[in-house]
Amino acid sequence: MGVVIAIVWIGGLALILAAITSARTRARVAVNARVHTSMEVSSTKGAEALGSLVAQSLQDAGLHETGSFDGTRFFRLDRVTQLELRVWSTDDGAQARVVLPKVRSTSGRPQKLGAVGSALRSAERSLRRLDPQAQIG
Image 1: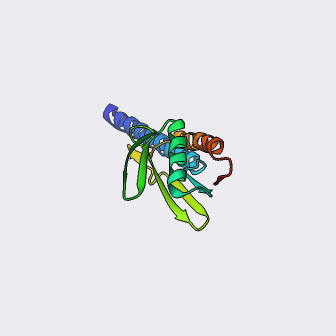
Image 2: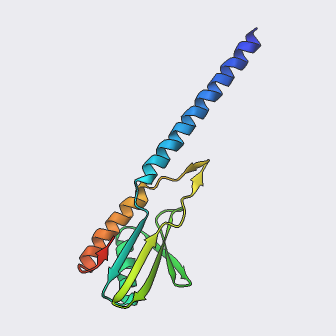
């Protein structure tokens, strides 16, 4: 009889732990849905000048440039979070887009994106100081 009680108790504990984990994952997904993971910038400056300004604003926000490939520059926020910056010319200046390409998972749960949103807001404030005429969205 004691073995049956132990098995039922362990099974109940496993169900409770699974429910807690599921609730935490749903909560993280809900919080992440409200976080901005991209920033778009339009400017009358050329593509090279705009790229330099956006890169400087990202560095001011605490990101570190880790390299570039095929016109995309990469900025690392922490050991797992990397943002991508792409800049292109338009008829009346240039546009830039900073984006988190994908959300990584750890132990089956998506990473926390609060730091990404904070870094992008800080970069936006810095960019507004560096180029007051830039259109940021």
